[in-house]
Length: 517
Ligand code: XMP
Image: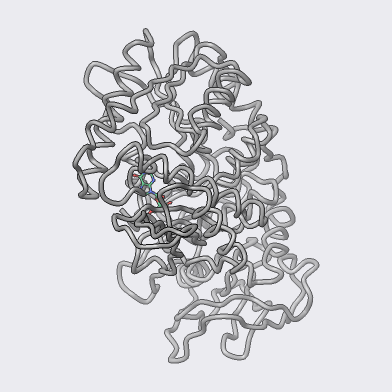
C-alpha cells in the first residue's frame, strides 16, 4: 500500500534479527524500509517502490565458508548506493575483488573507532566514536576503488567507501544503541547519500491504508476477531475507519479474560467506536470443556479448539463475509519467510484463527503487515485508542486458563482475576509498566497454611512474574523493587479471599518459559 509513493531503502537480510533492527532504524528516520531475503534480484528490489539505496545486513555466517549467503551480483550494477554492515561489508568486499580473512583475534563488544578520512557517511560524527563490534572475520584487502575511512587497532578496515559508486561498508553495527553515533551514520547514508525523502509517518500511513482497504474490499463484508489485544484492536479500528459497517467484529469471551476485560472491549468498540460487534459469551462452554483437565497441553488444545468452533459459529451468523482481517505484523512476515528459518509466528497459532473450515472461503486482510510493533502502537494512538490498550503487555490466547495451574474453575479464575488486577495496578502506580515486557500472576495447585486475623488458614498460593524481553524468545526476570513486591503481597492477602501466600518468580527464560503452562 505504501510502495509506489514513498522513497524506500531496502535491507537485504543476511541474518534475521539484525535486518529488522536496521529497517526499524531507517523508519525512525522517516524513510520507508523494506526487508528482502539476501538473494533478492534487482527486479525484486525495484518492485519495493521508489528505491533509493540498499543496506546489506550483518549475519552469523562467514564469507570464507563455501555456500555462505551471497547477494545477486546484479545489485552492484543498479547505480544505487549500498551500505554493507559487518557480514554485508565482508560479502561486498569479497564479491568486488577484495579479500576477507579469519583472524585469530575476534572482536566482540564495545570498540572505539578513529575516523581517518572525510566521508559523507560520518557527517556530524566526531573523529573518535564508540561502536559495537561483533565479528569473527575482517576485510584484509580492499576492492579496487575503495578507501579506508575509519579503523581500530585490531581492525584496519573498520569503515570503507567507494565514493564514485557510493558503496560504503562498516565492520561494526551502527543499528545497535551501543554504537553511540550509529543513528547519525544511518541518517547520513539514508538521507544524505541515498537522498531518500523522509515522508514515512503514521499519519500518511493511515490515509494510504484507508484508501487501499477501500479499494481492496469494495462493497464486501470483512470479519475481524477482536481479542482486546493491541494488534487486533488497531487492525479493527483502522479497517472500521475505511469501511465502517462493512466490518463486523467477533469477540469471544472464553471466561479466561482479565478482570473487566469483556466489559471494556464492549464499551470501547461497541460504544465509543460504534462498530458492529458480535459478543459470544462462551464462558460456560469453556469451563465445562475444561472440567477435570490439568495437563497443560490438554488444556491449551481444548481452549484452542473451542475458540475456533465458537468463532466460526459466530462468523456463520454474520452473513456473507468475504474477508477475514488479522493483525499480522511485519516481523511475522519477515520471520516466516526468512531463509534462515527464524522464529516463525507459530506461537500465535493458538490464538489467531488457524486453518479455515472448508465452507468459509475468506481472503485475508492484513493491514498491519508492513508495520513493526512500536509502529502499530503509534498507529493505535493516532487512531484514538486509549493508552492503556495501546501499551498493553502481551496476553496469551488461552488467557488465564494457562495461569490457573491445575484445574480451571470459575472460582479459581475469579481469584486469579483479582490477583492479576492488583498486580498490574501496583506496577502501573509505580510507573514500571512500560519497563516491563510482561507481568503475570499464576495460581498454583497447592495450598499453604497461614494465619490471618487470629485464625489459622489453609488457602491458595499465587506467584507473580514480571520479565523484560525483546521478543519473548528469551527473557530476564524483572528486578521488581521490594516495596512494590511488599504492597502487592499485602494487598493480595488482604483483598483477595482464599489466598494467603504470594511468591515472586525469579527464573529467566531459558530455562523457564514466560508462562507457567
Ligand atoms: P512462553 O511461555 O512460551 O511465551 O515463554 C512466550 C510469549 O508468548 C505468549 N504466549 C501466547 N500467546 N497464544 C498467544 O497469543 C498462546 O497460546 C500463547 N502462549 C504463550 C506468552 O504470553 C509470552 O508473551
